[in-house]
Length: 487
Image (cartoon, rainbow, N blue to C red):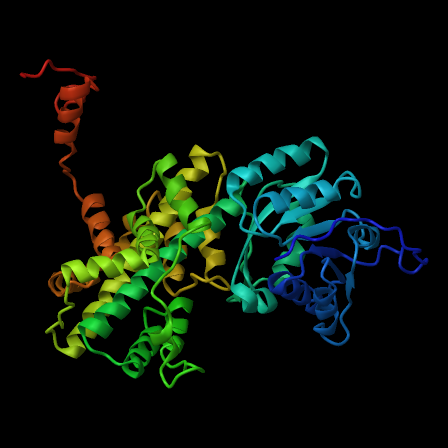
């Protein structure tokens, strides 16, 4: 998205224009910004948008539903003049310096009590800085995650606002109106103090990374290992989406397999290069989990596998050197499909468990006071990681709001136990086939470690004390000890 041109000519305004008609303003009229604003207009709000690109301004007005009040302007000053107070101004511009530039350009134009909303994917540390900076100027700042893509923005996204609690009542009715709905409940809630909104969205995207990695591994196992065609894969994923694996990502995966390529006679999925980068929120989730610290190995593996994929030339050279051959998996097709179904279900639970455990830790360690019950509630609709599983998690958090890990819920434990055997069976054959399945293996390793009453880190503690006098604790006596080891 282009950064708006912040020059402020002074056009001659007439009395009608200066009447503070509009209730919500948007800076950045790319697809997301435009669709979010049109969604708001469809729900009866009078909205106004600014972008330096006149074609985007024109697209905003031409796309508006008949009878709604939508206006595009060419200067920030004009937009600010037309907004009712306290002004509600949302930005959808690239994270980083562009957000700071927009804020600085707004400062001469806004007044005490106005509300500035960052709806992009900013890093939470930047959001914390901006909250403090604008508080000093007696302005409200809300860091707000928005998930659902272009269609979600237009028809109903999941919305994750955080920050200044005093500002939320002013924007709550608007956000509830435009958000997705599940059982009549809006998929928006106050996510907590400071940068909680952007933090929750960051973790949401980390979970998204992980589930997408799992789906790609299951696809590889069924396609290369099991020999399933694109048509068969479509049917498998379509059936899965009609059952307990129901989710947005499974749904779109089923659709992908039938998409034709407009340049060849092949399916498009077969023509897409196997190369992807890792940046932004997925990488941030891994980095910040280490800082807490909270283990999120499936998310970490998803980030790592994307990075490995980006070394396409090196992978081609390594393949020529080692000449690996992906062997067919001998398991009968129906059984293989059942095993992959259960493996995906098991591993998907691990993805959510790790992300939610990270939010639980951040709620206290970073003093964000994130309500996990509300997090899973608003993720049930509109967002990219919406799935049937979230209803189960919602029930678990309603029973125990302070649950540190979703795996400690008895209902979730029953689901996991039913799928564990098939995941282990699938991984045995997958390892022999030489098909990489790092996400599935990481999910099982995490589960085995988390549910183990005994881990071998006593040896690691002994090693650390041996070479660095780092001390250790004992199983039988309280305190901290050091030994002069025999050399």
